[in-house]
Length: 189
Length: 243
Image (cartoon, rainbow over all chains, first blue to last red):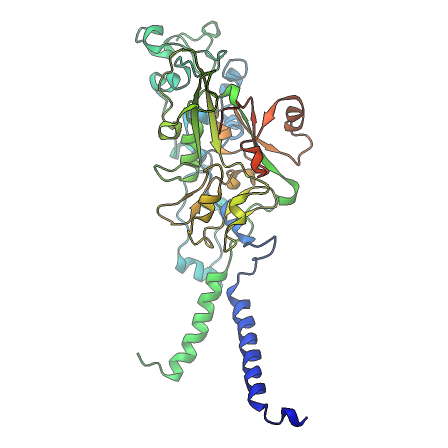
């Protein structure tokens, strides 16, 4: 052991390394988010956060729950597979109520320390009154031509017209009811 | 600034509480959604696309995509029968406002909607130096905005040009396959508003999904198959000239 007699400085140095490594492990434990590595080399909680993005389109199932009369009318026509929001725009807020402001930092702090109860998401967004957000009636003059203007690039079987020649300036809904556009389906008002 | 020992004793626990608060993560939003039971993809039917731009507008609305950037866009191809390798391709404002009227001529015209292919072996996730982008267990390629540094390696790596650096957040941004919708049982915004059904969300792990029968009976192709990205945007009727 005489060879190690003068090696004290090496052990002290090695001790420092071990200490530094332990400190690194402790710091790392606190800095790396808990869900990192849960599913792979990424933060597992990121998926929940991305999924928390508020939706803007409600989906046609939601529309048809209340507007079953329109759904029935649409079902038999050429526009059966054109969903409501394709023409009427994004209407999640019509279904779920207008978006409420997110709780602020102070509010969340109160919840954290137990001085306030967390808000119920169902109370934050409710659709007691769908009329708070209502769709604007689409203008058929701009809406219909978006799809039905004739162009060589469109599939051949798709119904296409030259709007200027086709209606003589009359709005489309004079002859075609958008929910069931065939003229013999009672289009004219 | 001088801090006394007494002040320090108060400040340290306060800082610890604050840090705990920073680390607190949002819990799983849809408790009924099981990631391992899905493998998402998209079916895009070229023969049905009319170039109306509904998908591009809906995507912008649904995902707050900044002006001038696109998570999905539509291209119009114009291909002559003599020179298939050099098609004329236009995509004015990503097709957001539709396309100019095309007059009949001797060449072939068609529309190609484009978006993230949600590759199973995605080149964009492999180059991320910090683990900010990944293929989720349900097959969706996502970006963790809290971890992303905005180095844009992934923007360069994507062979399909589907990523961009968000001008405000300064992190990589891309199609999430409307992750907030599909985890709730809704379809994506672009599929919801497509008037002709040219886009369909598909779940390859769902044995009842009609995609299995469709893939078996149609000439379906993915973009740049030679790159072996495991792309899951399946194109029906894809012309050989499409890049």
